Length: 395
Image (cartoon, rainbow, N blue to C red; front, side):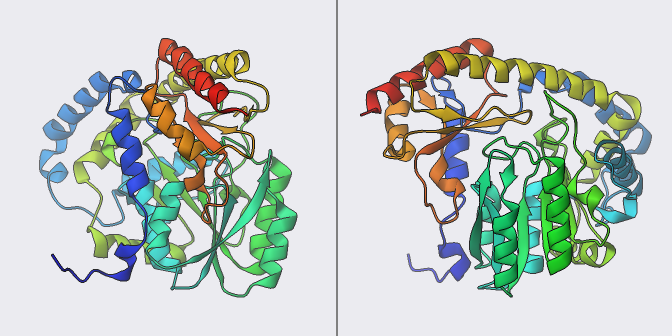
């Protein structure tokens, strides 16, 4: 069959995430591949009550079209939470409700990127963001990272030497895929630089409330006085992903562009989902629920690190995330984690090869592990299987 597709559909992308999710569906595989929350923590009974309450109390509203920007009360609840947790100073008028924060990434490409424009990002960075941006034909410049995140000196050199940088994409808290977190001074320097060079930055923060060690740090958005930071948030990691509820918080001029994308794309985010989660925030204790999540994920993170320390051979390195869902493993440079994955699948264990997290696919000796979605026994057994494969591949 001969079909004339748009050029954007001829680029690679999307299949890697689909493959990852497919792996998680096979019960025989111990999968550290996905970024899935622990389903046993979903507040099923509470949400059942909220669903009934919404339909009993405002059913005609819940089943109707609603505002493209989102329900005012729900947006204000999110703003209040951002102000309390992220040290921002925003209102509901600064927020657009979206179908997950992944939708914001796709909209961001539409809002900011013409073909050939430059996007700066951490190296490595979230592959889902790359897939969302790729359809708009950008060029990427990867900014080197260290244990504290993006290198600010390298960033400034790039900002000073290129004119068509449209956007910087960053995850300062418990980054996907590495789990690294930027310290406060680096955050301040970053905001200083984007203000100086007048470049918009997307601050993607799906994991910010999931801190297990140390002190919470202010968001980039809270440090931004000029409106260059566009903040992305989601309920997928602190409540449940099935509702597909995220948001973008931005300066009025920028937010108006996102609202246009939303109205052009799907008119609005699910009315009933917004009302149910809004009622949950009002009537239940989201903070207590997040504390439960943090306690379980900390336990699983600690167990994964302990088992890695006991089982992995010399020459292999890994990060020690202070929060979030992921850790990053670095093999000796001669090893290829994409190729090694085939042997891991034969041994019924899976991860995400690190190559996909580099726009230029420049490194192949890393892989990402998730610890939130597997119970303790399977974490231990899965790490042992990984260790056996790694040992067999070492020179």
